[in-house]
Every structure is written in structure tokens, then in C-alpha cells.
Image (cartoon, rainbow, N blue to C red; front, top):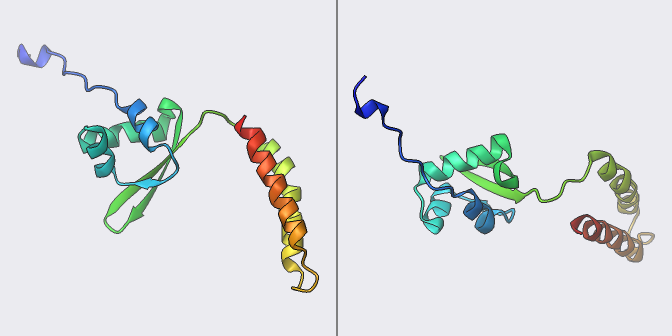
Length: 130
């Protein structure tokens, strides 16, 4: 083995916190834009995003979609998790009521009921954000 083969490769600086801080907003981004804005190379950005996606690094959840010949990414912070049981228990009745209201004709549909249900959804989101 040559002497050069024994030398460790230089580690790249961690960019995950910067990606989370600037791009974990639920919007879709091209890796090239992320790389440009945080001053990193695109391969490093893709490696970091893949780690976020596969292993949940930096407390993020990642979605990807193909658009033409490229891939876009959407990143969400996972600062807080809500159980599926709680989501189903609290959201199912609201969804059921909204569906029922949506089936009514214009004469019997109640905008006040829809507004009330929207308020319930808003209150749940506020509760979960705390």
C-alpha cells in the first residue's frame, strides 16, 4: 500500500444545519439552488439531503419529486411528532363533517358550519405547534 493511500481524506464541513435553517420550509428546491445559497458543492448538498431522507439526520423529513430531467426536494423540520392515532382520532370527525357539508346543495349548505370546522382545524394545528 502506498503512503498516500494511508492518509485519511479531508472531511467536508457539515452543511445540514444550514440546509435545515434556510430550506426546511416545505417549499420545493433544486439542489443547485441550495448549493449556491449556502456556498457548498451540489454533490455535498445531495449527500446531506440523502442522509436527511434515509436516516432523519438534523431532525428533518425530506420529500423528492422528478420534474423533467431533474429532482426537486422539499424539507420539513420534525421538531415535534404527533401520533397517527391522535391525528385520526381528532381529524376524522372534522373530515366527516366537512364531507357531509360538501354533499349538501347550495340552499342547505351552511358557510357558518364550514367556518366552525375550519376553526376546529386551526385550533388543532395551534395545539400541535405548541
